[in-house]
Length: 309
Ligand SMILES: O=C(O)CCC(=O)C(=O)O
Ligand SMILES: [Fe+2]
Image (cartoon, rainbow, N blue to C red; front, side, top):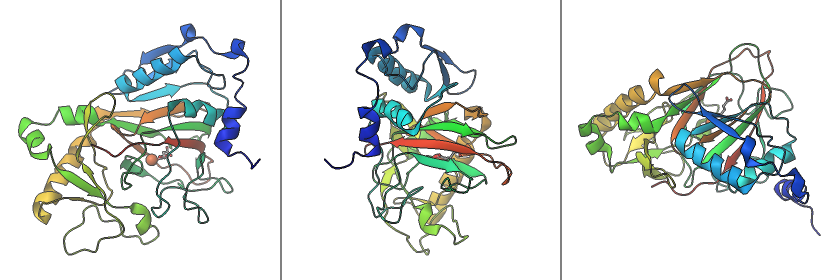
């Protein structure tokens, strides 16, 4: 038999054979944060096999709150993968479209991606600020959600914020909603600009097109909850399909000012053992910088998603 993939190994070794290990749903509590999005889950050990009702409760809570925060977890990579696999398949981009942590040999990122500035841990994300974005926006089927698990956190900075794009959309005036309801937006792949120092926020018609372009709706409908959200990063290069330069760039700048307001944002101060599970379809996230000499190590699993509609 060929070697098992890390995912297969993780599920094979998940101690599901011992029914008594299954964590009962009664002790799992979900408490909304006093914030524009998010809820804290307590009484759940992600290392254990979960009861069907627990998974259904978590899925519903994610639809209601957009992000879930789990505290005080202690997991191997395999236990982390086994937990995430209850929620869907792992995100695999087309091999010709680079994303965070794409490997040269396979054209794919690993299943568990180190999000770290630490030498030997991948160092894919450095220690700088990350501006508000939705992961894999430039791919044909961006991931539906991700789980980020904190193993080492810096003393200063390195907080991650999430934005409620459903609320941001709901608050737009009727005229703007009417204007943008059927617009398509192309988000260009920032990894094709990596190391160039050039990061345009809008592609004007006299500028070259870099890489493949997949238009997605600017107003996105969540595939399960039906909620509508503004689907727009704050800094990634974009283009409104069918709009001239002036009209498109003015509209996008106005929507970016709107969506990144503090009233839509929850800032998470990481503690070791935290897992944050976010819905990537109706949120953005960003990160503050932290000192290069302080280690930060988080691990991320991204889940597959469908074509946005
Ligand atoms: O480092 C962080 O807090 C977030 C990094 C990020 O954008 C991601 O993992 O998708
Ligand atoms: Fe991200």
